[in-house]
Amino acid sequence: MMMVGLMTEYPSYLVYLVYTAILGITLVALVPKKDIKRLFFCGVVLGGMYNVFWAAFAKAFGLGGFINFGPFGFLGIPFFPPIAWSAYFIMYFYFLPKKGVVPYILGAIVPIYNVFFANVLQHLNIFKWNKSPVLLLLLYITWHITATWGYFKFSHLLNPFINRSSVEAMKKRFKSTVPIRLTQQYAKKPLKEVGPKENISKSRERVK
Image (cartoon, rainbow, N blue to C red):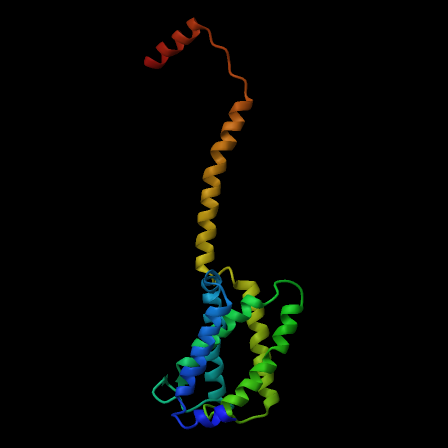
C-alpha cells in the first residue's frame, strides 16, 4: 500500500515506464541473450501484437483496458503494454515445458497471476475493467492457451534467426560430409589396371 501511495503522487503514466522497465530487467536477468534472440519474434507476435488486438477488442465492446497513459499512446492504445507483454511472453515461452499437456495446464493457471496484477494496476489508476473479473480471467486463459498452441505450431516460422542459422549449419554439414562420402565411395572401387601401351593410346585419343 505504501508503494501504491507513493506512485500516486506522480503522474499515472509514469507507472507504465516503471513496470515495463522492471519486466525488461527481469527478462535480461533470467533469460540468456541467445534465447531472447530466439524467442523475440514469438514474444512480439504472440505477446505484443496480441495485446494490441485484445486492447482494441476490449475498447470496442466497452469491456475496459488501459487508461491514463498520457502522451504514451496512439488511437487510444498505449505504447508500453505491448512492449511489456512481449517481454513477459519471451519469459513465458522460455520456461514453458515443451511436451505433453503440461504447457496447456500452465496456460490455464498462469492467467490467475495476470488477474491479480491487473487488480494492482487498477489501484495504480492505469487500468480499468468494467465487467466481471471472471470474464477477464477467461480472456487471459484464452490468450495464453492460443499463444501456447501458436508457439508450438508456428515457432519455426516466427524465428528467422533460428531458420537462418539452421540453414547455415545444414550447409556446413553438407559440405563437410559430401566429399568424405564421395572419397569413401570411390575408395571402395578397385582401380582398373592399365598397361603402358593402353595408357599411351588413350592419351592420344584424348588429344585428337
